[in-house]
Length: 413
Image (cartoon, rainbow, N blue to C red; front, side, top):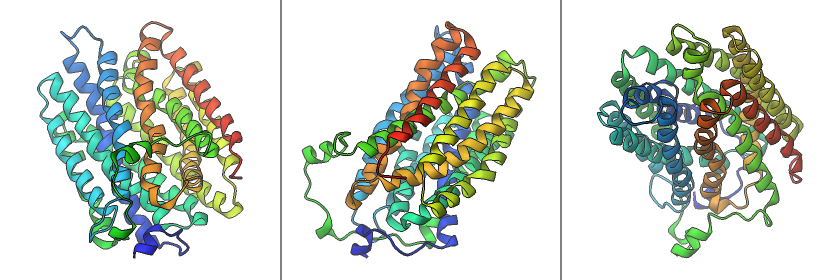
């Protein structure tokens, strides 16, 4: 079991393993996106009066501070899972602890009666859910051979978008902010159970764990672009495309209500999320499997990023409900391919097996850092520099730049 934990996997994983891991992944995204899509926006609107901030700025502060916690939490818990020696393996203890802590954090948010509890609850949710997410992500390079990672990444992408849809649906249909948080918490906790109960993890022998040193541990989080240029370009590509996507999603609730004057923005967000999910589901597994079959990654990332930039441009130039529906559909097509193939590309450029969790955690900063940068960019763009038209033009440009930069990667086709 120790040798297998550090070896490059060669045996293909089965459908049951993939389905259970995908469900665990989706459950974590429910815990994130029920709040991000609906619940935090409603709470920011409640708490904004008397703070001197607009609801947009307050939401930006809450999500931004939480994202700062996420920046540190993902690589930290990935590194800790790399070094974990237990009878349950390296990853499983962190999946369980993170999901349980995430559920409790969402319950704290359900009862938030002050602004500081709102901030603290969301920071705790980011801390704990990232512990679980880091371990789930690291399980893929632990167990899945290279030429199956596009397909497995596709199924994780399916779970991700279904988690976003389910989280949005639970937050909308539960019957209030508190009930929405309770529903998301229950789903998050129960969703990881099949994987941790039915699929034993690979164990690490204590003798294989490096000697502890705070200095070496801290230094390990720096992955030199000079020594690992492909990893650096892959990270930058992911960061820019995710930043463009984060700018689209952050104020979607307010965009529908304040710019399009949609009568029921809660339902509008749910409809757009569902449309996006349907088209994403149509491409996410197909794109990953196709990439595995032909042994190429970069063309898929390039053209999916271009398509996402086009969809974001539609939100800027065609500001109607019909335009929003078209943009959601096209964005789903592009993001579906990007989600599966980019994940496989990232696992292909990892430096070494012993640090898979930590290195993927550093890579996943490219997912969480946009949550910090997006509010910083979006709030002034919406409030002072041209509104939603400029916001979505900037988002399209950022995403397009990320897509083009994937061509700088040399070690992956």
